[in-house]
Length: 461
Image (cartoon, rainbow, N blue to C red; front, side, top):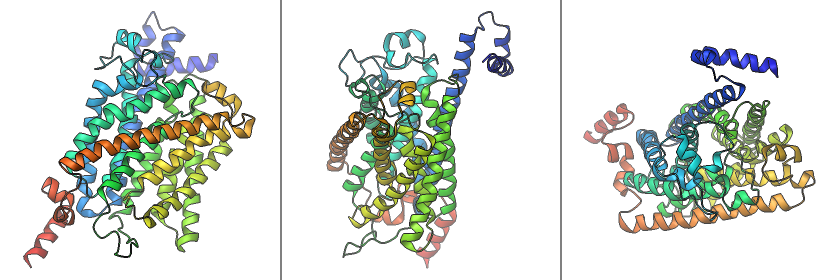
């Protein structure tokens, strides 16, 4: 322990020279400094996942919509940052006065210790400054919103991104986050969702599902006999790069959720379970696609990796390494089959948002009810052991209740909000605008200018 402390002191002296000469550079102050640097780095990794979403979704959609799909990532994260600062963070993590439903204090985060002490007792377990805690939790809210936009792909109106983005970030996401992470009613009964299989992924996926249903399928997706047509993305290489970035970003997403670093390598163990799940999910999914199609499907492999990462997000701190691989493989396989099933049912989910983030989010949340070990549950100080480790059905029941409660809440509110938008300004662009592509109809130019020149020549001819 002494060697570790000396090594950490040397590193921090290089990073922060003034710390080496400070009178208050005690072990406690050093721990705070290291924790703060690590969580800020984790926040940057999670925010960088927006680049992964931009590449994945742009590559998975058609060329005529690529600029729009990538550009709205910047727009919506900007909206999310402003709204979460003003309202969302307080609703999610502010003290609730005992109501167990939503926070009531800490609006317009000012980054001061005084506000933290007065309003955010749910985050007091970490010594990291409130400004860094805010940035880290903002990154999570941004990921959930990015997932929701998957259901709008290639046909949603740009103004809808403003309206729904504001309401999702201010009301929907923070309330469920409070239930689980902010000291709300699910936290009180011991729901285990370490980094957000339900809080982040199921919420965003449920909103995406509602959007997909209300928007209806893209032009040409289904034939008159309801059989689906394949609408391939324009650039598989971009999609692959996007998934690699997301995979890397998950090393901030899961290990950073403990809001600290000096805990005997616990965050390193979480990184290990995260990686094992992702690897197993990708391999399992491509094998299953090979058996199903007769060809090894690259998009299926990419979705398998993401589904596994989503699933391990809840359980990464509660399960053994072998169980993480099992959870990842199960998520990758089930996600493949649910994506096929939804298409057969007439649901046009362009980037498979609900299968990858919703179904896998449910799998991941329930998995702790089976695989959580007594030792790891005690270490995380949340809930108890799963069914396979002598915990009976209790933890599984808590997990199932959390899934049903979150899904129902987001489903109802999303239907109400998007239903009102549809009845007033409309959700979907016109048929002509959809055929032209959202790059040109919403922004006046294509993401690929060469495509614009080609289209102009074709029109002239």
